[in-house]
Length: 482
Image 1 (cartoon, rainbow, N blue to C red):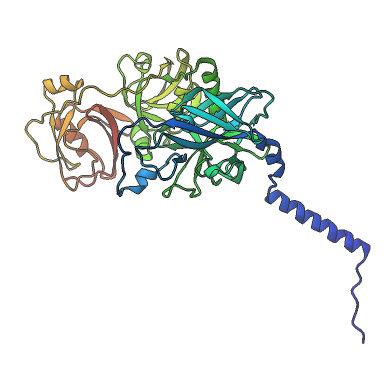
Image 2 (image 1 turned 180 degrees about the horizontal axis):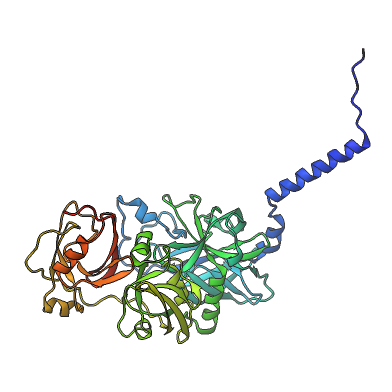
């Protein structure tokens, strides 16, 4: 018997072709093609090099073996300083740096990072058509690390701006820059997270990506798949100085606002209301009777500040500012900072179990000031036995109260090794919060009676003054009675 022969009909051929097309279309969706984006937008990205005269007479300071590499390299700026080989630090006439930028208008305005052009005596911009132009700094803002520079040219290709707020985690993004001086290098990845807060960076809700970013990418654009700039590549997390999968970009809406102020005024005006805040943890939320961990807990209010005049009090939790929710304490500096000085904003605060609405007239943030006077040290009176928290406290004298500007409080004179309270000797305990009820601490007897009446699993919060700072310390589960 002969074996049956397979017959391929035109209909089968058509179905196979259609199936193949579907597979190819699906693959195209899963693996994006960046070629058109690069062709259309690559010409608007520039290479930036700077020259800075070395103004030192002695040898360059040396850094011997560093113990804490993680601290040294945490969120380091990625801008290489290149110097001619074979010259000692005394002989080097200048230093050079490399970075990236992108053209935002046909008449030569360019956005980059402030740290790319900081201290530069000369700025050179190299275009993709090999032209090299001198640039001048229109303005720079160190707080957001944004600089606006300009070259004398016309008819330049410019980028299109996107909406960073519409970015989704997992969305494809692309960076173009000059890592290690390799011009117009393209790298791609996805958005890893949004609204990241970084140490010492209170005014930028960073976009986190896994796009490969290296020295020289600083100041370059981050594009979405529509070819719109959604961020400025600014920082990386690295323990080696090179890319480790964590890079951070400044949202373009922040940059647009900053460059507008720099172009119009040459400086950036930010709002302030005069409060010291901390994060609201779950335990703190429980102590204050708040439904969940959110908002910014006010540790202290500057006397005579906008917040003070508006009626904001220490222990208030700010949950909205100007109609916008404050989910994390890091949200508040951004919201207040982006508010124009002189304008009035609404505040919603959680105060002793109820919501209260206030209006505040925002002032202008000045440069940081260093406190001129060291904090006064409280002198403890005679000690008493350790209380249920494993700490020894005593009452403040009239002189001590006047010296630190409080009407009541207890000073910590000793902390037992087994204490659960995260306090130190010399700390002043001002109030205790439990289930939303705030109690001023006026005497040792009162404090110990309050503690004695609590369940062993109770969560309490202490308002603690340490030097010039005030913070809230939560103690979860105070244990059995002694």
